Amino acid sequence: MRFINAKFIKSASKKQEFIEDELPQIAIVGRSNVGKSSLINMLTNNSKMAKTSSTPGRTRLVNYFNINNQVYLVDLPGYGFAKASKNIVGAWDSVMNDYFVNNAKLKLVMVLLDSRLMPTAQDISMLDFLAENEIPAVIILTKTDKISRSELNYNKAKIANMVRFNKDMIIATSASKKVGVEQIGAFIDEYIK
Ligand SMILES: Nc1nc2c(ncn2[C@@H]2O[C@H](COP(=O)(O)OP(=O)(O)OP(=O)(O)O)[C@@H](O)[C@H]2O)c(=O)[nH]1
Ligand SMILES: [Mg+2]
Image 1 (cartoon, helix red, strand yellow):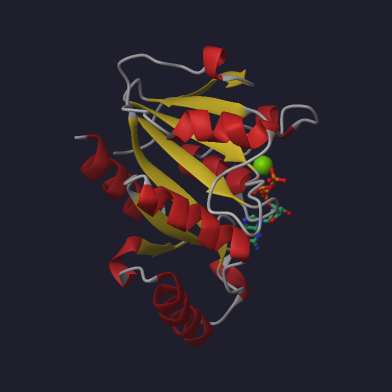
Image 2: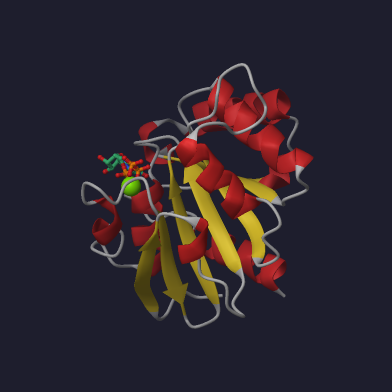
């Protein structure tokens, strides 16, 4: 798909506010500063798109962006996983849990990882949680403009090995160089059909 017509719809703070309509949903997760807002802005080709959701107070909310009336991109800020537990705990985490579990409209989760760093325990918990709940996931490596091609290849292989992901399920992106839009669009097509 191409991201022609993008619109911020709403922020939700609890299950009752979640959007449940006919459109499929693609969620975006990752720790703070990894590049979630920048990814949304790159995909929608609008540097202001995700700003609405990054104003203080909204950062802990589930933010919905309607794309072409075809799919929602759903921005889920912060993990908040308990380190030693594979379950999501705490107040915010129960909202996350509500979002992920038994969400028939959720077709794919894009898990953002900084291409320069190895995954943290929280990243691994997130990936384990998705796998345990049989929710399809793809890894998006962000900020690849900050490393060389050889470093990227090295890190990608190492990350793939570490999280036991096929390299085909890891997409290298750069928001500042606009790298990865078409590949992500193709993935979304595959998972919402
Ligand atoms: N060079 C470079 N910088 C990037 C890229 N993506 C994001 N950044 C920068 O990284 C910082 C964080 O990006 P955001 O998109 O705000 O990250 P976020 O994940 O939305 O952060 P939170 O909303 O705080 O969770 C900003 O300064 C961005 O400009 C990229 O692909 N390349
Ligand atoms: Mg953000």
